[in-house]
Figure 1 (cartoon, rainbow, N blue to C red):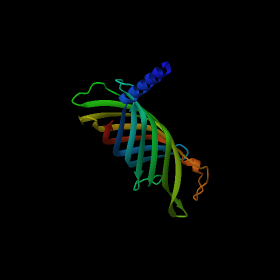
Figure 2 (cartoon, helix red, strand yellow):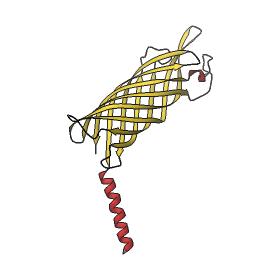
Figure 3 (spheres, rainbow, N blue to C red):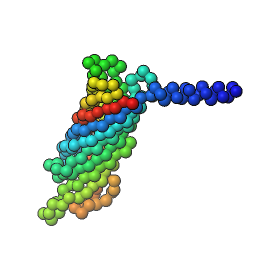
Figure 4 (cartoon, helix red, strand yellow):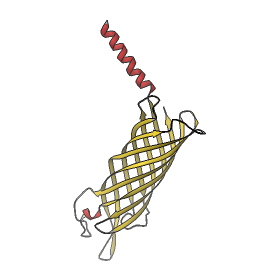
Length: 207
């Protein structure tokens, strides 16, 4: 009988913890500007991309304005005026911690997020000139980095927020393979470091 009461208490505690937890799902779109440098080739590149983003957060502690989750950003460009990055398609999945003001003014709540990449990939087609002929050479990258985001939530109706977010990230692009391309340059010369600034607008649903 005692064990039954213990089981019931544990079950009730677990159910209570789950029932007060809040899950938030967000979908965003916007633009990203990359500023990348290559120390080996002594070059600098500005890349502009259109970005889609999705996120999932869990508020595990009742009445404490902190959540944990993941965010995926997908920047894509197909007409960039840069020989190193005329085409760029990236995917970045980050672990995040978020905090927000417990007080909303005019239904507007400021928030901040900190995150780090756990899975990052990018594919480019760089222009290489060989014997006077320009050819697009595909290059695959692993990407790593961290970011901070500042933003505002506007909640005109319960459980639905309009979200405006500015994210600044530091990142490193490293080729996935150590090889020499058809232009005779080793792929490791195409390692880039820099920043990515994103302005995103979207919706958040809180369940």
